[in-house]
Length: 135
Ligand code: THU
Image (cartoon, rainbow, N blue to C red):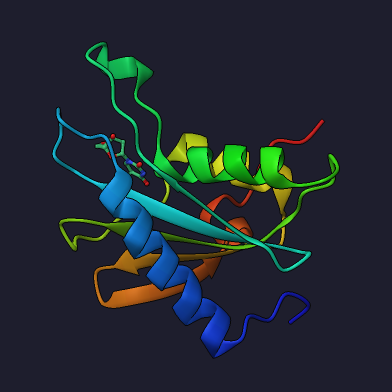
């Protein structure tokens, strides 16, 4: 596979995502989410969910990690190699539809590591979003 991830990279992403969860601002759902992404250039960026009293304005951890990666990258060519998502309730939680499309924008071969019903699971973004939209 072109986008092979080492065991230690995977473990590190899960650890960083789990740590980022502690920064979550989730007073409405109490569902704390952390995300960590590895760029094609080997850098790791994290994000957490940030909720709002106007619920619809809440932002997912995955998109915050992507925003941090965009701003932390030297150029506009940030590509996602892999992204991990952790949650405080240890329930099955893969990225929502909106986040899948945003991940797709920055890495059509990205590996997505998430807690599934059988534990930690890895799928490609293409498996999670078979017909992603591109312009
Ligand atoms: N949430 C995420 O941050 N990522 C996901 O993959 C699923 C849901 C957040 C949004 C909201 O703050 C809370 O979890 C409950 O939906």
